[in-house]
Length: 213
Image 1 (cartoon, rainbow, N blue to C red):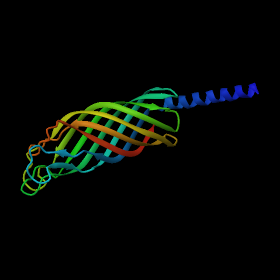
Image 2 (image 1 turned 90 degrees about the vertical axis):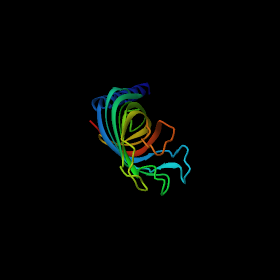
Image 3 (image 1 turned 120 degrees about the vertical axis):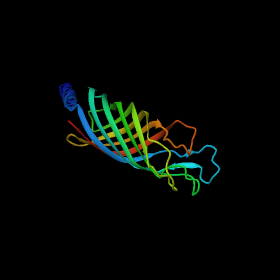
Image 4 (image 1 turned 90 degrees about the horizontal axis):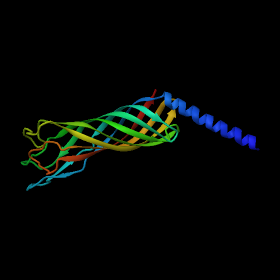
């Protein structure tokens, strides 16, 4: 009985070490996700017209990522990741005819290096958290939504990223990923619609796949 238990224990250890060795070899990953970005409504200061609130659409957003693992154990792993997030059509609405104050749409680009910690990285299911910082660029339509030239300019600001998610291995080196990330970035330049704030949250919720090699 003792011999069987010892063999089983040795087999378990050998299997764990083998899986860990494979994970150590697969240090790189590249992937892409699609999702939506959620931006909270913003009140316009000292507005005397109808609908003095900036409403932002939930624009379809692409996230591309490359990561490299620097430390892998059966319990956790640490990776450096580079994120590129592009929200190419954020529809806007505020004001009314005669009080056109925001552009019809804008685009947002975030580029943020980050550190990611995965739990149980050598298993089929691995939750993780991420934290990083980089920059964001916002470009606007040159026309206001209710007519007229938009006086707002493109802006670039520092961005802080924080997120969490879940990786699920589906086949060989292919895994799917579901993630939620907040990109805390500078406010767009809306001279006709001041909000009194300097930064805003951009919550990306998406899913996709990545390849580890």
